[in-house]
Image 1 (cartoon, chains in turn green, brown):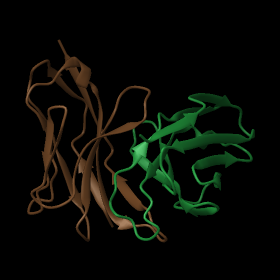
Image 2 (image 1 turned 45 degrees about the vertical axis):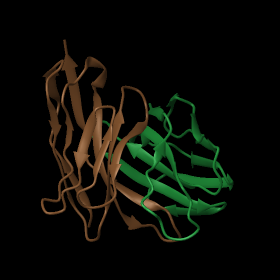
Image 3 (image 1 turned 90 degrees about the horizontal axis):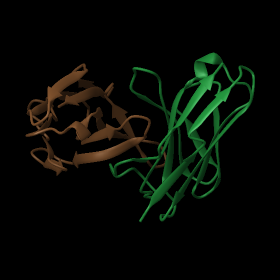
Length: 117
Length: 116
């Protein structure tokens, strides 16, 4: 069966410090990968998605970046954190199709609670 | 663009009460519809889904029917338990991302509290 791992679970970082959140998926090949952010009291916002190694698309301009160095690894980074980067970050995967999406559900990790102080 | 509207919470019920959480959507095509549940401090778990009109998704006693004529996907459960306390998100998938993948549009979530 497929599993998704996300770490760390919680993180407290000062303003201006770097960030690296990691997500790995097991039990599937060539998945589509996603980073979402959930701000307090709000819904989920898609930040980045990837359909293959080295292929990253950004949905919103921001202080963050993403990378996919391996097929089942997805990393969210920042060189200098802002207070507004605080939130709950969720990694997710869906079945890859090699072409257009097939409305497959997304499967989420347990999230990382980031607090920037 | 696509959007999902959910009833605002929190919804507070007594154990064994009937649950309805309303969800309506706006989409240009023929979306798939999903309900996700988020327990405190955790990520989102897929609860159920429906991929075409009149489909009924069901899981763990929860049900939702894809109503194209009313653009709705209301979540129901006949008898809630304290363990059902969580935040419930309605979502749709209608937009294919360039190069593959599907973009889910989420509602803002509805918090459910079930008391003894």
